[in-house]
Amino acid sequence: MVDVGTGSGILAYFAIKAGAKKVYAIEASNVADRAAALIKANNLQDQIIIIKSTVETVTLPEKADIIISEPMGFMLIHERMLESYIIARQRFLKPGGLMFPTTGTIYTIPFTDNTLWTEQANKVNFWHTKDFYGLDLSSLADAAMADHFSQPVVGYIDPASLLSNNTVNHTIDFSKDDPKSLHHIVLNFDFVINRTGLCHGLAAWFDVSFNGTTEQYVLNTGPYYPGTHWYQCRLLLREPIAVNSGQRVQGTLHMVANDRYSYNMTLTMKLAGSEATTADHQPISSNVSINLHDQMYHYLNASYGK
Image 1 (cartoon, one colour):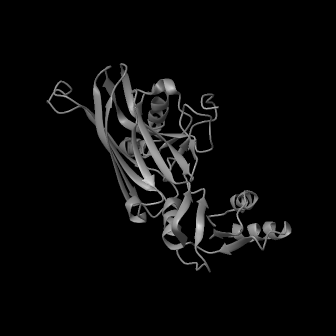
Image 2 (image 1 turned 120 degrees about the vertical axis):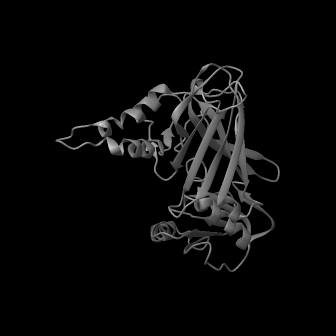
Image 3 (image 1 turned 90 degrees about the horizontal axis):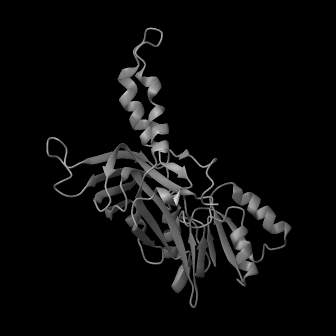
């Protein structure tokens, strides 16, 4: 067995407790030294081999029947550990071997939250100041607005804020997909709105499945399940879209991997249909650029999800 990104070695330890004969526990950071000390202090060094290296460069003496890891960041893809996890499969897994987790799915759905949107918008008020000790700051107001709305909001989502009965999903199959497929992800969506309100953006969460030979288990981080430390994620539009029940909201979420172990994203949402136009007959739409690595945490006072 191989444990990718073992950290303290706890997954490797649980694997031994579950019956694994040997675990190669790979960890690139200095916490590998602490894991090695912990494993040795518990007399497990013959069963758990701590290797301080990356999966891209290490050489193992044998192939593995199973590869385990906890490679998920918030919204599944943040931190870009999934690529290393898949590379480990390509390098170390025996034919017919198992990956735990096996798949990961991102779920998206439009939401409304005027309090959250207003809170972000109000952060820009300072930059509208015309006379700050004689200095006009207003030329930076638009840039400040872009900065604040480029932050994904991490926290629990009230299910009552969701504006559709269905999600649009993107699944990554860790047992089959190529790491390069994670460099550019495009999610196209077409939601039917279930109630009248303001659409403030796109909500997202994920689940991962563990597909064994006879059983399947799913870890779900969505708002209808007990809370996890991944919470959920909301991507705010700079300009909310007024929607009526029965209307359709269409759009695209482009996710491009960056060198900050995360993603730069562009979210575009628009009302579908010829009746949904501005005064100059253009489709009513809104878009925003989002930096997934620049999160705003918004969960300290939320009770839902717990």
